[in-house]
Image (cartoon, rainbow, N blue to C red; front, side, top):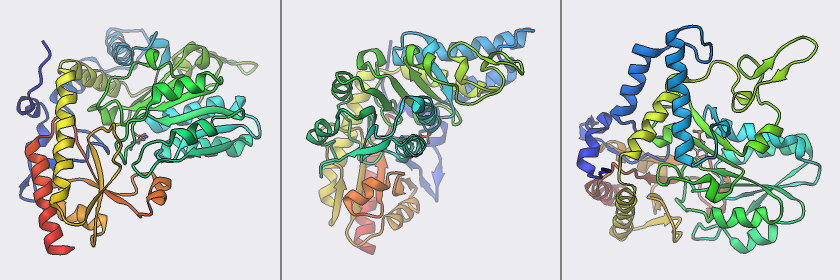
Length: 406
Ligand code: PMP
């Protein structure tokens, strides 16, 4: 029976119940990285205590245990994404490596003048790999603008999706604005023009369970550490037919079928893209994070997150000079803001003194900062384990900071 009670849930996250700078920790930097439930810590500890060995070597019992746990986690991820097959689930170091892998793999399809459509709200991880591949191939990276509210400009999108477009690489959810993009609709339009589709799911998966078959995207990438799992591992989903055609990303052990000095051949999917000993314990930890999430009532979790954002939105007016950047109609609980007379980094430091962790700066989205004409923002990003009291604490602290320092 799935449950959702925030006070019970918080006990699953030991890091949350500590004092920071003499104050109870209020962790509102989940967009940068989320905290880990005991289930994840225990699964990784147990893996190292009882199962650790290299995978896919098959010579002994520990090797079998490690392989079973590792491949079990891949199946858990497959179910989470509703992918057709585990052949389509590639382990990477994170979203960044996943997008680099795709960009590298699609490079042979790109010719001078071809266009890669991205948006102005992309994280650098979904801009720079495309710029690098464009440099190599003569293709061009074309940004779709956003509206002042922080939604994708759909008219501009339709205008720019043209005969030269080969790839659409778009974020599902903006890490700065919290905007949820209408990716299903965008993908459909791209498909109608035979454009390949890449979705950056890094900020979407902590809030939604994507269905890659329903979306019909060609690629979907996310990082474990934002999904309450360990750092050092992430996932690339890709349609098998495309992955089959793509060249390997890195060479080495595991990714080969047969090596000789005359000719080396590649392993089957997904191993063709997994050179070297993988992050085994991390895969197990990510599997445990997804199992943990599967035990929560998703409808209630999403409702609780909406309530956090609503409360934050209501309280904005209580801080003189506070302005929210990104007021899209469909948002995850992320709030970027500025306060007149205060530098974002000072807001961050002053909040930290009160035990409140937020992020400040450009959020790896400089083109978006340029659009809004700001050097950076302060950003509070909430997770399902945050409480309404924590939202109130944030705003009480902001009121005080504004009064004393602005
Ligand atoms: N895309 C988005 C939207 C992100 O928020 C992030 C992380 N901030 C990334 C990509 C990159 O993820 P990672 O650093 O885990 O590779």
